[in-house]
Length: 162
Image 1 (cartoon, one colour):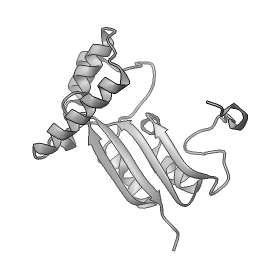
Image 2 (tube, one colour):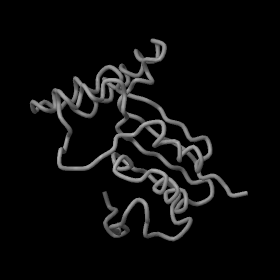
Image 3 (spheres, one colour):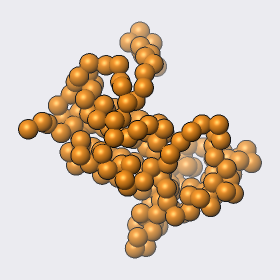
């Protein structure tokens, strides 16, 4: 894709990002925030954003079927310590990001798709997108069903001090 020359890999902790203040226009975390102390990690993500910088994360959520799903399908990686997100764990994002919101996904299809993956069947990204779009549409039609989704997108913009 032609990005090799500008690519620099850095290892660090989400709670102590090794970057200067205001270093980035955007921060994206996929499936990582639930491994962190969110009160520290959201603040660090804010710190490294420029004024008006945007934050996004896609994470697992402790929906009503979470424990059932784990019992039947197991964790993706049982050796990794994770604390799935809840409203309490996402609340720090509301304090540090303007317009922070949590959008639920996967109320109907997440666990059937995980079951397929467990037996080695992985639909294409296009098929997954279509299934997810259908799930969101159906879940949005039924009161409160959408909020039971076991995946979330967390979105926000850097708040200015003062």
